[in-house]
Length: 78
Image 1 (tube, rainbow, N blue to C red):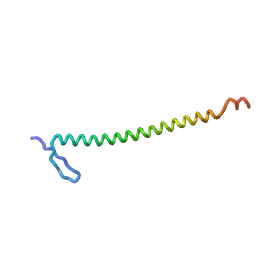
Image 2: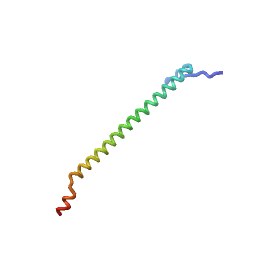
Image 3: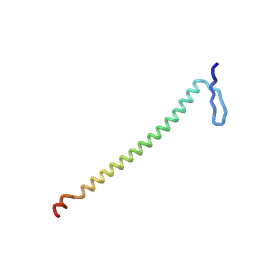
Image 4: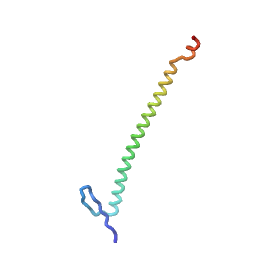
């Protein structure tokens, strides 16, 4: 005897559903979970991009400051 498939709502109401409806419910739940992971991945990429941008700007600033300081002429004139 085949076990009947039931769907239980949040308020406790139960419905008998067909196999295709059960598959659709599983797909919908997986899509929701996938959407959450895609959002997390997007935010992680944005954080990584900002971090790399800060590192790049710091590197450019250090090169600029090193270019302003003239080591060799100060050593020559001592």
